Image 1 (cartoon, rainbow, N blue to C red):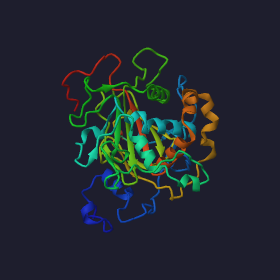
Image 2: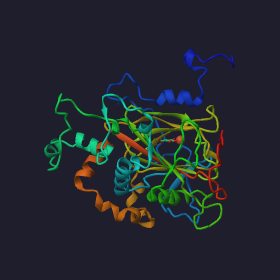
Image 3: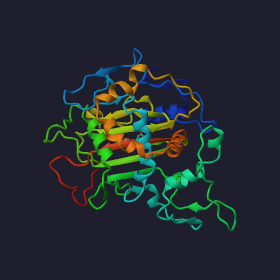
Image 4: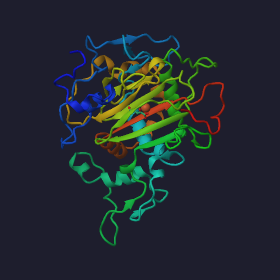
Length: 381
Ligand SMILES: O=C(O)CCC(=O)C(=O)O
Ligand SMILES: [Fe+2]
C-alpha cells in the first residue's frame, strides 16, 4: 500500500517537486478576473500565532537594527524575518527612488535588453519613465478625491492621429533594475565590465539589516563586514510571479541577501537546498525585511503572487508598528533630509502606483573581503 498513489492527488501532479506543488497551490488563479480568489493560509510574521514554528531571535550585540527579529525553530536555519522594519515614510522614500533614479541611467534595466519597436518613440532625456507614468496617471480625479492637484496633466496625445505616444522606455515594461555589479542574466554571472555606482542609501540599509545576521559585524574591519555591492530592484504587477531559484552567483555565500518589500503584499515561497525540501508560504507585507542568511543563504525561493488591495488581511499586531523601534536605528536619519523633496503630488502618485505594484529591493555582497574584483571569464556555476 505504501507506494500506491494517494487517491485525492491528481495523477499529473505526482512528479512535481515540493516547490512546484506549493507554487501551484498559491499562484494567482488565471480564471479569477479580479485576482482576489481566496488566499490559502500563509505564515504571517506580523501575527506570530502559536504552532507556526516562528521563534524570536536574539540580536547580536553589535546589531545596528534594534527592533524584533524572527526565525524558525526547526526549519529554514539562518533565515531571518524582520516584520515592519521600514516606517511608512521610509517606504515612500524608497519607492520614490525606485521608480525615479534607481531605474534610470547609469543603472541597468530589463528594458535595455528589449529592441525598440517601430511604433515606439525614444524617450527624451528629461522624460524619465516615472514622469511619463505620472503624467499618464495623474488626472483630474485627484480633485474628485478631495486632493487638489493643480498641475495634473493629461496623457500625452500625438497630434496626428490622436493616439497615445508609445515610448520605448515605459514603466509598464519595467520588471527589474540593477545597481553596483549588474547581474548578467545571459552569462549567469557578474563581471567587472558591467557596473554602476551603488546607491548610498541601499548600501547603508544593506549594512544596517545585515548586522542582525551573526555572520556580519560592521564594526569590524575584517571579513565579517557586510559590503553591499549589488542590488536588484524587482517591479511586480498583479500578474507577476517569480519562479523558484537560488541566489547563487555571488562569490561570498557567508553574507546574507537582504530583501526589502514595498507596495502590495505578496506570497513568498521559502524552500530549502533542493526543490524537494519543505516549502513555507510566507505573507510578506510592505515594510517587512527578510534575510536569506546562514543555512538558508542558498535556499530555493520565489514569489507566487501579489495580493490585491481588496483582499482583507489580518491586521498587523500593534507591537510591530515601526514607530517605537525606528527611533533606535539609523534608518530615519538616513532619509530625514531627502524626505522633504517629495512633494504632495508625487506622494499621491507613488501611493497610487504602490496600490497596484510591489517593489522588492534585494541587496547583496558579491565578493569576499579579500577579493578586489570579479575574476575575468569566471563561470560561477
Ligand atoms: O520578490 C521577492 O521577494 C524575491 C526576489 C528575488 O528572489 C530575487 O530577485 O532574486
Ligand atoms: Fe532571489
